[in-house]
Length: 167
Image 1 (tube, rainbow, N blue to C red):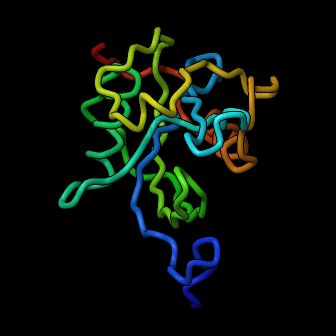
Image 2: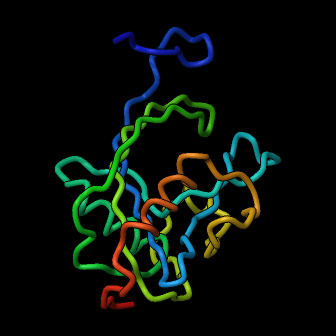
């Protein structure tokens, strides 16, 4: 497989990054999303994704998913279960091109009010908030098609009873 597109003509390959995301659905099928913008493009609409972020060196995808979920929403889960899917996505952020390999998890939780606990400097500059998005209703910005598809699949396949969680 080729290295893929170069970084805006600079001749460098996109920076490789691993990430984990958690599809959090409430009993009614609403999906928790975190909105963000690119600091290099402040007037672009927010993109809404499930909570998640980078996997640190030596960290498992499941541990990263739990940590990121807690940092971005205040929700701590002892277990996010097995990975339900993965994807590789390329995107630009802060003037750099990234190729991100993501591992996705899915959980059903009782609806709660998200309260970020540990946003990084970049997250404070780029994240605009969280929302519970009812599947089928238009979100307040851009949502990738595969997020819609994965959210609908998780709603269909997850048990209806929420996990007991600590906030």
